[in-house]
Length: 225
Image 1 (cartoon, rainbow, N blue to C red):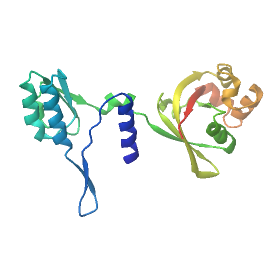
Image 2 (image 1 turned 180 degrees about the horizontal axis):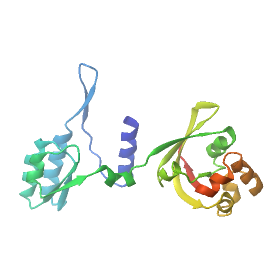
Image 3 (image 1 turned 30 degrees about the horizontal axis):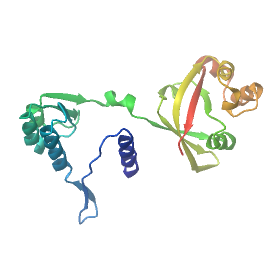
Image 4 (image 1 turned 45 degrees about the horizontal axis):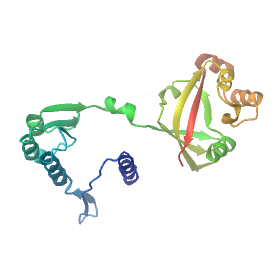
C-alpha cells in the first residue's frame, strides 16, 4: 500500500500537481491512522476560493464534516462538485454541493492497470530482463483477451518462482497466425534467431489447431523492474 501511494504521489508531482500530506499517527494498538487530511482539504478549498484560484472544486471525499467548507466557498461564487463512489455517499455533501458525480468501478477500470501473472522458461525470462526481447507471443485466447495496454505483467521463472520481473504492456497486436505476427515486427524483438526458430518454438507450446482457432497475439513489453 505504501509503495502504491508513493507511485501515485510521484505521478502527481510529475504533472506539476501540488501534493499536501496530512499526519500519520500511531495508535496504542500499533495501527496507523491519517489525521488532519480533511482539515487541510477544507483550508485549501477556502483559501484558494478567497484567492480566486478556481471556479469549480471537485471534492473526492465523503466526510460530512466538509459541509461547512463547501458552504463557505459557495459564498465566493465557486461551484463544488461532489465525486463519490457507489459504496459510500454523504447525503449532507450531496445536498449542499452544486452537482454530484457517481464514480463507478467500470468508469475507472480503463485507466487502472491490472497486474497479470505469467510463468516463463529461463531463456525468454533472461532476454526480457536484459531488454533483448520486447515482444512476448501468446495465443489470442479468452485469457489473453483480458490484457489491456498499460496493464502490467509479472513474469516468474519456472525453475525459481521467487525470481520475478515486472513489465508494462505498450501495445497489443493480433494476427491470424504466428508467422504473420513475426513478419509484422523486426525479428530481433522476439529474442529468437530467425523465423524458423520462432515458429518451431511456438509449435512446441501450441498446436496448429489452437493457432487456427485463436490466432496469435504479440504483447509489446516495456521492462519496469
